[in-house]
Amino acid sequence: MAPDTPHPAFIYEEHPDHPGWMRWALRDPTRYNAFLGEIIVRREGGIARVRMVAGRQHSNLADHVHGGALLGFIDVALFAAVRTFGLIEAGPAVTLDLNTHFIGGARLDEPLEAQVELLRETGRLIFLRGLLVQGERPVTEFSGTIRKPGR
Image (cartoon, rainbow, N blue to C red; front, side):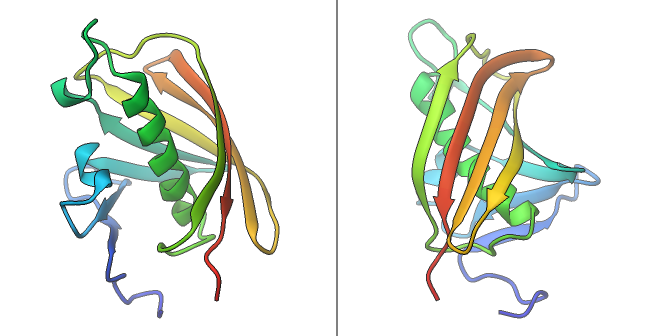
């Protein structure tokens, strides 16, 4: 697919309301990613910053962000990051593993940011690690491996 050709399944374009940020979304609003809400991403040096704002639909009974919603966001953030690093376009890549350690609770209606770092890329694998934060406060640290799509 040519660099300027839109991907049939994904939207990756400049966000009109957030200068310097890209919008990362599936074109099909009935897929899982839509549940997370709007996701924006940008690269700063070797870090991809991926953001979302969790709402009530992401909450647990303590009125914090549910751990499952955090895990889902981290998984999607890995893919937004590798796209931002220019390593894959989109499509049938898969998460091979995702390791997390919850450090603190996340509040609703405040931006969550996954700060993702590329550790290594091989022919078929991409190794990443990162920190999920709210403001300056760490929420979760994580690492994951993505297998690139086959040819």
